Length: 436
Image 1: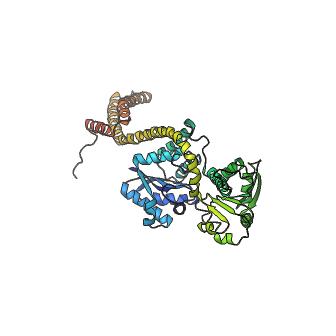
Image 2: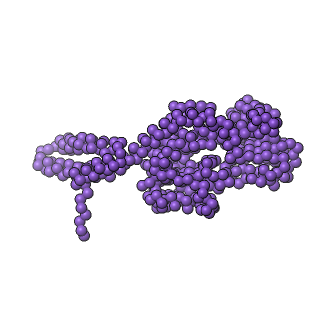
Image 3: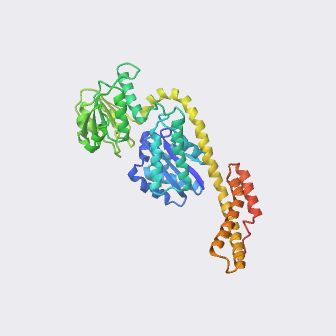
């Protein structure tokens, strides 16, 4: 068995590639089943966010298993392998475990230390469990990754004041507003006419950061009015005008700053739509949806400035240097958690030998117990028989405790393998095959 992760992220692929690989939650069950149906894939779980698509697997054979995952990604995305492969990364065994721990801890995020990735890893675990695509190995690994993410945030300062994708989007708006005024600084959004499209988790964070950066009123558009109203109710200090998505054209005509974060699989704003509108002032669009909510051609429309998640790097780089030192604190925790999992993983090598040893001793116990009971005669009561049987089982468990503990204890792999061979030879656990 072999642990592997295959995927791509903001580090290896632009948004136009990432959006083709994105797997929405409603499609996750089908994707997991498709992968699990491949004979090479024993266990699988998928992490799909705006900045990454990663497939964590337990596979039979390294090359065949990874090839099966690559084939799935090509079919899912519609990209030829020549287009897809340059953007993919593949990690195996120890490297795969380390990568997952870094992801859960927020050290591989676009925004160093972001908190949202941990909830996305939790979601990956939940979906894998609900769809029964994970077994004991991945379940242990992913559950430990969640614990690692929590440790990083509770035992270091990496999560303190960490910016999210949403807050970076708001800062990007402030930075672009400042640059348009000839200033290289973040400007208050107090004078901007703001609209937010979508009422999900990312939009909730947008509202929090917009309020903190001087915005006092905005328009919130959503496919269903009720969900927008429920979200706005949590922001009593903001004047939120909730509208249906059907009023988007009116907002694009009258607002100066529009954020989009919807689950739409196709763009909801493009050049064709924008060209039909009459506008007097600059319209700044910031899209944090993946797949993108705003088509690439929107950037070519006169009077429109369009940005997507990849443009957030301009803001992120301003904040990253100060957080690098804090990230070093988290690296120590990640190494410790990786070691703990790998020690458990290595200890599984001893399980077959332990099971054979236990079965061999159990067979001897049962045989000798039966001989003893048959000599006791009919005067030996049922209660006494149970006491003697419990005694024999207790003796076997006591005998097994020390060797089992030693075989499963953390140790170099060659030492464990030597110990396993000694046990198998001493107790004759691998008798020669009889010729038929």
